[in-house]
Image 1 (cartoon, helix red, strand yellow):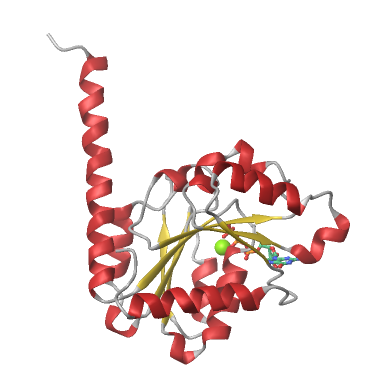
Image 2: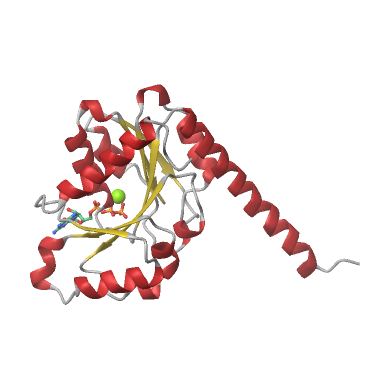
Length: 229
Ligand SMILES: Nc1nc2c(ncn2[C@@H]2O[C@H](COP(=O)(O)OP(=O)(O)OP(=O)(O)O)[C@@H](O)[C@H]2O)c(=O)[nH]1
Ligand SMILES: [Mg+2]
């Protein structure tokens, strides 16, 4: 006789494998089209959508950016992005605290991928669950705003460990909060020595240039077929 506890393990594994398979399929689909995909992860309100808006403005028409917005409810973020004239698809995850790979597949099915060079996926605002679920991305980016506290890389290590880039956001607010940028840099590098770190104020425009240059370099690398996929 098989107990419930014993049965749960293979079931959980098959669900996990299925999500991984789907993420792999997304990676293949985007790699075949040489589309650079970026998965943005942060706590709610760290400035993801604001930064995406700045990226679209900076890359302009030639950037061929498409955006997938993940939120529990509403299409508020998709409406913000739509105003910039790029392709956007809103996913409402309802009870799920992250975008599932299968949801991303459905979103991509509704897009003209031949007109895209860079796909930006803004995950549901959360530092925990999105870190556990790859979406076939080339680049994972974690954002941490200066109002959230400088100990976060140590308290939420997985997302910092699995990200390629850390963006410290809202640096214009540094004079008003106790936030030790150097401590964050040290903590992030403790959990992930290879993480690349940028500091930006999207609203004031500070620090955007090096970040945008980095993304442009990744896009060019992908276009030449030298991406990680
Ligand atoms: N001072 C300051 N405020 C910012 C900056 N970037 C974003 N904000 C503000 O922070 C708030 C949240 O910004 P969003 O871009 O919506 O944040 P988000 O991470 O997309 O939020 P969710 O999608 O809800 O997780 C808004 O009021 C923005 O105007 C910044 O660089 N400096
Ligand atoms: Mg947002």
